[in-house]
Amino acid sequence: MGIKERQERDREAVRRAILDAARDLFVSEGYANVSIRKIAERIEYSPAAIYGYFPSKDDIFFALAEEGFRILSDPARGERPQAAAGDPFDGLRAMFWRLYEFSRDYPQYFALMFVDRNVPRITREYERFTFTRNLKIQAAEQIQACIDAKRFPATVRPMAALRVLTMGLLGVAVMHLGDRLSPSENADDLARDVLDVLIAGLQSGTKLRSSGPPLHCPEIEAKTAIEAKS
Image (cartoon, rainbow, N blue to C red; front, side, top):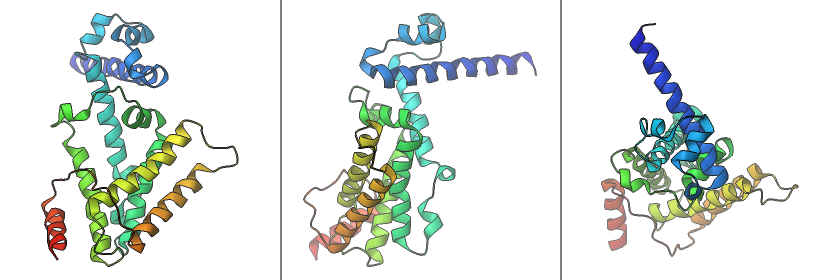
């Protein structure tokens, strides 16, 4: 190994140590209560050394959030809808179950990305997190596939359904993360029940009052506009 390769390896090792220490501290003490100095003390470096890797505490968070969202979107880490092309419902279940799986298997990332109210918004780094919008589009398209296959009524709005399904699974995830379930309750079973009930509600044609988050997906927006006029 040459000098340059060794330097790059050592630099990556320090960067990894900074991120791991920051993640532990952000989750255990709260993002607002952690300083660059605290992170430096955890890995026995000077604050100035940390700034050589990350310009600010927010930049450390953005690096961690990017890691987390990439884990969430990694097809190799969970069942994806493509594996269930025969039935769009199977794909839908796989997609939303992955969200719960992520909270269970990567609780620190989940807490940092979805629970702590004091972390900066990832919209500040729009270009960096463009791929997260694709996750939302994939989920909306999967719901639209269920509508097209007549598994959901035509009155179901993909983005509203997306929001309801997401909130249901996030609720179970947060209760599990916060150790708020009774010892006799199985979080996995509860998550499956919530997902089944929400899907059944959408299937029954229950009218949703919320509109869901905005989405720039021309195909779905065009179908929604046509159905609204009809």
